[in-house]
Length: 266
Image 1: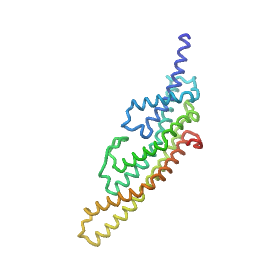
Image 2 (image 1 turned 30 degrees about the horizontal axis):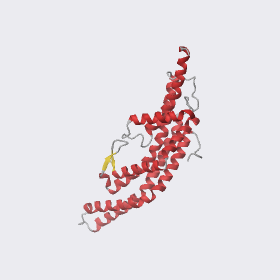
Image 3 (image 1 turned 120 degrees about the vertical axis):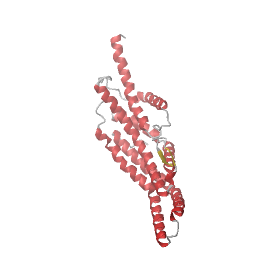
Image 4 (image 1 turned 45 degrees about the vertical axis):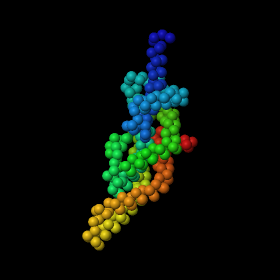
């Protein structure tokens, strides 16, 4: 093989690995748990490369007319990163559903004073929110949610081939609209604690008017925390039902995002 024939062969081989790696790397860059600050960048890079090597035999042939080092090649690279990051970002919504629910409960019950550094965002977050983060992550891996999303990532190479223009800005509508589902899920998980604490605070208001000599502040803080922990413990019975609804909505939106049907995915 001469030098003139070797160069196109090397560029074609580079394209067949580089663009799938960009899409898969974008997924691991934004996916729940994998994108956490506690996961080293080197680990994410090795995982992306390993998954790419496993995917290569099943990935449709890349268009060889696109030059990697050109404007069209740059647009193709960015589109691959956006597809992977968009699919990975959808998993973040699942975690944030219960993080928002935990923060709402913590703020209503006075448990918001206890906070830890969130390993995902690097900011302080209530302990209740951290509890739901760990619980949701464990359940997500227990039901093989990460494997389902990796399969969706493989299917995306068939529905969204490696070429410029297959992932346009209107495709992000599903990501934006799913934010409403995230807030609905968080509200349904925390509504019991919010209503219970509303009744408790209303009772304290009546007590203050009836007996002004009572020290409502010192007594109310302890009662609010006790009621909040009790309601939180009872509301955990509804966790799996809320998780099931959230992950079904997540899968439906993710399948719509890549233009495929969710039938046969699970």
